[in-house]
Length: 363
Picture 1: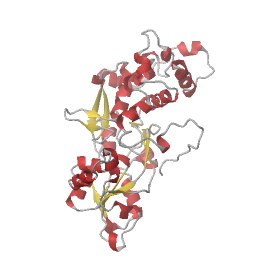
Picture 2: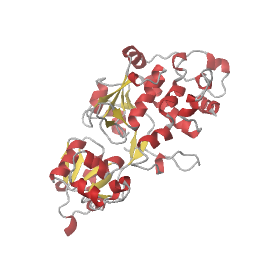
Picture 3: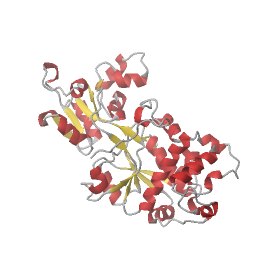
Picture 4: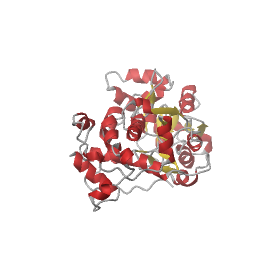
């Protein structure tokens, strides 16, 4: 089974049909970023406090899906699962691209949508960036006490005439919401925190967001006290279900955008960008092949069939093995952090049936 995983990776890296002698030849990396990270002794990942993805803990650490991705990359780089080899660096939707461009961190893993503008020339930073394949597919929804009005794009009926929609102006949600609503309905805010604060203060009665952002529990965790009563009214309902459909809290049924979330790196080091992308692909391939973290925990020390070839030289020959051994495959990561709040479905399922999968990213 593990050998099958390797075979897929060999094909994916474009060396199918080459001799084993070719595989044994060292191909040392020339990535300046990888060298700098190893010299520093730590990978730095930009992120923000987001439930399920990168949640700030009481001890100052972060926990979530994106944190595990950072840990997987660090394990691949250092050949070691110790969490001391990575650090989550706080950023924000307003500064994340500038922070990445200025090398405040090595890779941005912050529920960031891959778009044409960000790829070619992100306006805030003034440069383009490199994106991995998406690690999560999401879409814009509207939620809140008047989330049903926003969802149906109704600001004119008697019931919805007082609709006000808070939207973070440093996200892809903002231009899309501008297209859908007149200016007097919008309440632009500078951050996600300000979005929930606006809801709490009564400046708005609906807001824009993707999957985890529109949950009532997320709003409550971010200071929305009006949600406490709604949660209590839910009574014996499952907590996750209350968060999605508590009385008085409306999450729209419609999805108004495509949000392929990907990891982001600078364009000045293509080899490092490739490295990050292939760690992610390795986690997905492991799930496809049924390889789990436990498979490596139970393997004999000399059972190393995955170290034949990584594409980045002998120094990183165990990168795929270490990433999966450290955090598990993609499905294990999802189950651990997101399944309870956003049950896996749709585009986030593994495609094993040759069903449609062409998905152009937002332009």
